[in-house]
Length: 554
Picture (cartoon, rainbow, N blue to C red):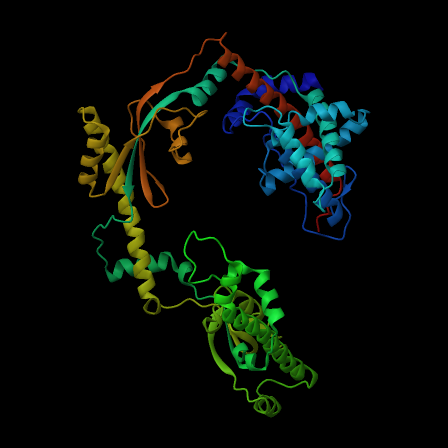
């Protein structure tokens, strides 16, 4: 088994190592194998059982245990919840495969001492110095005493399984071959010290002249017609029951008002209280008591409005009353209700008459010829019952109907195109001025003037990827692999700003092959390469196990 992995890396090392360099090297995160198709066979919830190393992927309970254990395991290793859903699925399935293999190899359960030693290496319990923090661990244990969803027994079971899974991975892992050139490349990326100039072009203030012809507008509309499709809309009327109409029938006691205030005192602020003054609960309550009472009455009136709206909906159902029939009109007239006209609205944008409520929109789109009225629905200031009239299908509007929006979109699109072109001018001018001997700030000002863009410039203090300065944005770090000393990067657009990076200086790290930095990086890369071998083997196990329970192709 080990020799197979060694041969695999000898033949495919460059490909594998290329993948490794794409990720940040973090020693405690499992490396996911290249080309893995793990999890691709998992279908949406189905009644059919799908056996997978002792779990039934068709069971919500088994899936919850499989992924819950994996999420806890990863969180304790990293110190925070770090995996997205795809990586968590990959990790969970490979973890289950490793534990199954541990059973096949008769690896015994972890001892108490092994679990204790494992805990001391978890990032979740490390202090700022990276060492095990007993206080942090005890705080975590104390939190479990009041957590109904996570017990100390569950944590210990997961940690014990992780110890066994790690033993399997060590068996599967190869020696982790690393070439000297690859160590130096990674040292260069991690420890080179950069001094960068950052020029920021302001997109908001950029205002180029953009001519607009009917022909250009029509062409833009035709090419982007999908943007302007009018989605399906529902047409309804509504019986509205305002809560304010029922506040007069609500009576509350002093004790009820006091309790209502005490449940959330921060909701009502004493307007007379001075900032920073010592709180005076009695005075604060007295100042807002009338508002508290009014809010309590309105809350209870809202419940009354909802109850009356429910009674109407039930009466329509019980009497089998058709919307728009004489019986329907008589029922509404008896309750002095006049249906309110509601402008057609979409599923995404609810009725404006009711605050664009997404809940009302969702319920409205459940209506139709077979169900012409809704249940009672909460609405701003009361409750409502909707009466369906029709559902308008999606349609493609004429340009004349949406010309204003098309014109705005066309203008914005052309502005962005011109901004990108201005970025090319900025880069060219910056490099020219810098070669002529200008300071970075002076060169940036001159380049901004040439490109008709407002530009601000600053030089960051020296930093490395391993110890980045606080002002270094992640978007800046992404340019370093493509930037040589003395050159200016292309402009990238980040949060409506154009960013250009000037590599003012770059100091290379120590590449001495006997130095501590070199030896440490080589060991780190070797560990990652070894884990890739184990992960590749487990990925193949997962794929084969999933294939056993794949639903037949119809």
